[in-house]
Length: 255
Image 1 (cartoon, rainbow, N blue to C red):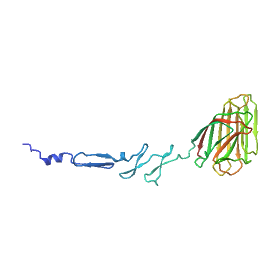
Image 2 (image 1 turned 90 degrees about the horizontal axis):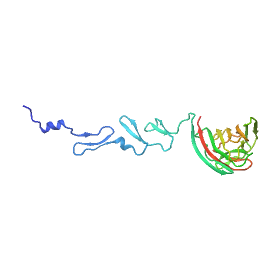
Image 3 (image 1 turned 180 degrees about the vertical axis):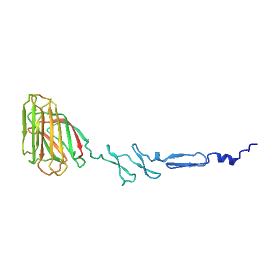
Protein backbone atom coordinates (compact mmCIF):
# COMPACT_ATOMS: atom_id res chain seq x y z
CA UNK A 1 0.00 0.00 0.00
CA UNK A 2 1.44 3.35 -1.06
CA UNK A 3 1.72 6.02 1.59
CA UNK A 4 -0.27 9.16 0.89
CA UNK A 5 1.93 12.29 0.36
CA UNK A 6 1.67 14.81 3.10
CA UNK A 7 2.11 18.58 2.88
CA UNK A 8 5.58 18.13 4.37
CA UNK A 9 6.48 15.67 1.63
CA UNK A 10 5.37 18.08 -1.06
CA UNK A 11 7.31 21.00 0.55
CA UNK A 12 10.54 19.00 0.63
CA UNK A 13 10.23 18.08 -3.05
CA UNK A 14 9.45 21.59 -4.32
CA UNK A 15 11.60 24.74 -4.65
CA UNK A 16 11.12 26.46 -1.33
CA UNK A 17 12.93 29.72 -1.99
CA UNK A 18 15.26 31.57 -4.40
CA UNK A 19 18.48 32.96 -2.93
CA UNK A 20 20.59 35.47 -4.88
CA UNK A 21 24.12 34.26 -5.60
CA UNK A 22 27.21 36.14 -6.76
CA UNK A 23 26.33 38.76 -9.34
CA UNK A 24 22.57 38.38 -8.69
CA UNK A 25 20.23 40.36 -6.45
CA UNK A 26 16.65 39.70 -5.34
CA UNK A 27 15.03 36.37 -4.51
CA UNK A 28 12.45 35.29 -1.92
CA UNK A 29 10.37 32.39 -0.60
CA UNK A 30 6.84 33.32 -1.67
CA UNK A 31 4.82 35.23 -4.18
CA UNK A 32 6.33 36.66 -7.35
CA UNK A 33 10.11 36.39 -7.11
CA UNK A 34 12.42 38.71 -9.09
CA UNK A 35 16.13 38.24 -9.60
CA UNK A 36 18.39 40.83 -11.24
CA UNK A 37 21.75 40.50 -12.96
CA UNK A 38 23.86 42.98 -10.97
CA UNK A 39 26.57 43.02 -13.64
CA UNK A 40 24.04 44.22 -16.21
CA UNK A 41 22.72 47.00 -13.96
CA UNK A 42 26.30 48.15 -13.27
CA UNK A 43 26.56 49.30 -16.90
CA UNK A 44 25.56 52.93 -17.41
CA UNK A 45 26.71 53.78 -20.93
CA UNK A 46 27.72 52.38 -24.28
CA UNK A 47 31.25 50.98 -24.05
CA UNK A 48 31.27 50.43 -20.26
CA UNK A 49 33.04 47.30 -19.01
CA UNK A 50 32.41 45.13 -15.95
CA UNK A 51 35.78 44.30 -14.41
CA UNK A 52 36.72 41.90 -11.64
CA UNK A 53 38.15 43.64 -8.56
CA UNK A 54 38.79 40.58 -6.40
CA UNK A 55 37.33 37.21 -5.44
CA UNK A 56 33.61 37.27 -6.35
CA UNK A 57 33.61 41.09 -6.68
CA UNK A 58 33.37 43.38 -9.67
CA UNK A 59 33.08 47.06 -10.62
CA UNK A 60 32.16 49.22 -13.59
CA UNK A 61 34.94 50.67 -15.74
CA UNK A 62 33.48 53.63 -17.64
CA UNK A 63 34.15 53.92 -21.36
CA UNK A 64 37.14 56.11 -22.27
CA UNK A 65 36.33 59.78 -22.74
CA UNK A 66 38.96 60.16 -25.49
CA UNK A 67 38.65 58.41 -28.85
CA UNK A 68 41.59 56.16 -29.67
CA UNK A 69 42.54 55.37 -26.07
CA UNK A 70 43.43 51.75 -25.34
CA UNK A 71 42.76 49.53 -22.33
CA UNK A 72 45.89 49.25 -20.20
CA UNK A 73 46.83 47.21 -17.10
CA UNK A 74 47.58 49.35 -14.03
CA UNK A 75 47.74 47.78 -10.56
CA UNK A 76 47.32 51.21 -8.94
CA UNK A 77 43.76 51.44 -10.29
CA UNK A 78 40.85 50.03 -8.29
CA UNK A 79 39.86 47.82 -11.22
CA UNK A 80 43.44 46.97 -12.22
CA UNK A 81 42.75 48.54 -15.63
CA UNK A 82 42.60 52.02 -17.14
CA UNK A 83 42.13 53.78 -20.46
CA UNK A 84 45.31 55.39 -21.76
CA UNK A 85 46.77 56.99 -24.88
CA UNK A 86 48.56 54.49 -27.16
CA UNK A 87 52.16 53.95 -26.18
CA UNK A 88 54.92 54.78 -28.60
CA UNK A 89 55.61 52.17 -31.19
CA UNK A 90 56.33 53.84 -34.47
CA UNK A 91 52.76 54.46 -35.65
CA UNK A 92 51.63 57.67 -37.26
CA UNK A 93 48.60 59.10 -35.47
CA UNK A 94 46.38 61.66 -37.16
CA UNK A 95 46.21 64.86 -35.13
CA UNK A 96 44.26 67.27 -37.31
CA UNK A 97 43.29 68.18 -40.85
CA UNK A 98 42.26 71.46 -42.43
CA UNK A 99 41.37 72.85 -45.83
CA UNK A 100 42.99 76.18 -46.60
CA UNK A 101 41.08 78.63 -48.71
CA UNK A 102 43.28 80.93 -50.76
CA UNK A 103 45.17 83.38 -48.50
CA UNK A 104 48.55 85.12 -48.46
CA UNK A 105 49.56 83.49 -45.16
CA UNK A 106 48.53 80.16 -43.65
CA UNK A 107 49.24 78.55 -40.30
CA UNK A 108 48.97 75.37 -38.26
CA UNK A 109 48.47 76.47 -34.66
CA UNK A 110 49.03 74.33 -31.54
CA UNK A 111 49.63 71.08 -33.44
CA UNK A 112 52.94 70.20 -31.71
CA UNK A 113 52.92 68.98 -28.10
CA UNK A 114 54.75 66.70 -25.69
CA UNK A 115 52.57 63.78 -26.85
CA UNK A 116 54.69 63.15 -29.98
CA UNK A 117 58.35 63.61 -30.89
CA UNK A 118 58.15 64.10 -34.65
CA UNK A 119 55.47 65.17 -37.11
CA UNK A 120 54.56 64.35 -40.70
CA UNK A 121 52.56 67.01 -42.55
CA UNK A 122 50.98 66.09 -45.87
CA UNK A 123 49.77 68.79 -48.25
CA UNK A 124 47.30 67.54 -50.84
CA UNK A 125 46.26 69.66 -53.81
CA UNK A 126 48.63 72.42 -52.67
CA UNK A 127 48.22 75.40 -55.01
CA UNK A 128 49.74 78.86 -55.26
CA UNK A 129 48.71 81.87 -57.32
CA UNK A 130 52.17 83.14 -58.22
CA UNK A 131 55.00 81.18 -59.80
CA UNK A 132 58.75 81.69 -59.20
CA UNK A 133 58.06 82.09 -55.48
CA UNK A 134 59.68 80.01 -52.77
CA UNK A 135 57.23 78.18 -50.51
CA UNK A 136 58.42 79.45 -47.12
CA UNK A 137 57.96 77.93 -43.66
CA UNK A 138 58.38 79.50 -40.23
CA UNK A 139 58.21 77.84 -36.85
CA UNK A 140 55.50 79.19 -34.60
CA UNK A 141 54.90 79.75 -30.87
CA UNK A 142 51.29 80.44 -30.00
CA UNK A 143 49.97 83.07 -32.42
CA UNK A 144 53.37 84.34 -33.58
CA UNK A 145 55.78 83.10 -36.24
CA UNK A 146 59.47 83.11 -35.37
CA UNK A 147 61.17 85.60 -37.72
CA UNK A 148 64.74 85.44 -36.42
CA UNK A 149 67.52 84.70 -38.92
CA UNK A 150 68.17 81.21 -37.58
CA UNK A 151 66.79 79.14 -40.45
CA UNK A 152 69.10 77.06 -42.63
CA UNK A 153 67.88 75.00 -45.58
CA UNK A 154 69.03 73.44 -48.84
CA UNK A 155 67.47 71.31 -51.57
CA UNK A 156 68.07 69.67 -54.92
CA UNK A 157 65.45 69.46 -57.66
CA UNK A 158 65.08 67.72 -61.02
CA UNK A 159 63.19 68.78 -64.12
CA UNK A 160 61.29 66.49 -66.41
CA UNK A 161 64.02 67.05 -69.01
CA UNK A 162 66.71 65.72 -66.63
CA UNK A 163 68.30 69.03 -65.66
CA UNK A 164 68.81 69.80 -61.99
CA UNK A 165 69.01 72.81 -59.71
CA UNK A 166 70.04 73.32 -56.11
CA UNK A 167 68.73 75.87 -53.61
CA UNK A 168 70.07 77.36 -50.39
CA UNK A 169 69.52 80.60 -48.51
CA UNK A 170 71.45 80.68 -45.24
CA UNK A 171 70.85 82.11 -42.79
CA UNK A 172 67.33 83.37 -43.38
CA UNK A 173 64.20 84.24 -41.41
CA UNK A 174 62.32 81.25 -42.88
CA UNK A 175 62.93 77.79 -44.26
CA UNK A 176 62.94 78.04 -48.04
CA UNK A 177 61.72 74.87 -49.69
CA UNK A 178 61.05 75.09 -53.41
CA UNK A 179 59.33 76.97 -56.20
CA UNK A 180 55.85 75.52 -56.56
CA UNK A 181 53.84 75.38 -59.76
CA UNK A 182 51.29 78.16 -60.01
CA UNK A 183 47.58 77.30 -60.21
CA UNK A 184 45.87 75.47 -61.73
CA UNK A 185 48.69 72.95 -61.42
CA UNK A 186 48.69 70.61 -58.42
CA UNK A 187 51.59 70.19 -56.02
CA UNK A 188 52.12 67.30 -53.63
CA UNK A 189 54.22 68.16 -50.60
CA UNK A 190 55.34 65.95 -47.66
CA UNK A 191 57.07 67.65 -44.73
CA UNK A 192 58.70 66.01 -41.70
CA UNK A 193 59.49 68.16 -38.63
CA UNK A 194 61.69 66.63 -35.93
CA UNK A 195 61.56 67.52 -32.21
CA UNK A 196 59.77 70.87 -32.59
CA UNK A 197 58.29 70.85 -29.08
CA UNK A 198 61.57 70.08 -27.34
CA UNK A 199 64.12 72.72 -26.40
CA UNK A 200 66.63 71.45 -28.94
CA UNK A 201 67.45 72.29 -32.54
CA UNK A 202 64.42 71.60 -34.70
CA UNK A 203 65.18 69.99 -38.05
CA UNK A 204 63.06 69.24 -41.09
CA UNK A 205 63.07 67.34 -44.36
CA UNK A 206 60.63 67.34 -47.27
CA UNK A 207 59.72 66.06 -50.69
CA UNK A 208 57.65 67.96 -53.22
CA UNK A 209 56.14 66.90 -56.54
CA UNK A 210 54.79 69.20 -59.25
CA UNK A 211 52.42 68.48 -62.13
CA UNK A 212 53.89 71.00 -64.58
CA UNK A 213 56.63 69.68 -66.90
CA UNK A 214 58.01 73.21 -67.29
CA UNK A 215 58.87 73.56 -63.60
CA UNK A 216 60.73 71.15 -61.34
CA UNK A 217 58.83 67.91 -61.01
CA UNK A 218 60.66 66.58 -57.99
CA UNK A 219 62.67 68.13 -55.15
CA UNK A 220 64.28 66.87 -51.93
CA UNK A 221 65.38 69.21 -49.18
CA UNK A 222 65.87 69.83 -45.50
CA UNK A 223 67.40 72.07 -42.88
CA UNK A 224 67.42 73.17 -39.25
CA UNK A 225 66.59 76.00 -36.88
CA UNK A 226 69.81 77.10 -35.21
CA UNK A 227 68.50 77.53 -31.68
CA UNK A 228 67.28 75.48 -28.73
CA UNK A 229 63.69 76.69 -28.82
CA UNK A 230 60.34 74.96 -28.33
CA UNK A 231 57.62 75.48 -30.94
CA UNK A 232 53.98 74.37 -31.22
CA UNK A 233 53.08 75.22 -34.81
CA UNK A 234 54.08 76.37 -38.29
CA UNK A 235 53.41 79.34 -40.56
CA UNK A 236 53.44 79.22 -44.39
CA UNK A 237 53.62 81.85 -47.13
CA UNK A 238 55.21 82.68 -50.51
CA UNK A 239 58.35 84.78 -50.09
CA UNK A 240 57.58 87.14 -52.99
CA UNK A 241 53.82 87.41 -52.54
CA UNK A 242 50.82 85.43 -53.73
CA UNK A 243 48.32 83.15 -52.03
CA UNK A 244 48.31 79.51 -50.93
CA UNK A 245 45.48 76.97 -50.70
CA UNK A 246 45.07 73.22 -50.27
CA UNK A 247 44.29 70.35 -47.92
CA UNK A 248 46.64 69.74 -44.99
CA UNK A 249 46.81 66.76 -42.61
CA UNK A 250 49.10 66.54 -39.57
CA UNK A 251 50.30 63.22 -38.13
CA UNK A 252 52.25 62.65 -34.92
CA UNK A 253 54.98 60.05 -34.44
CA UNK A 254 56.26 58.76 -31.08
CA UNK A 255 59.75 57.29 -30.96
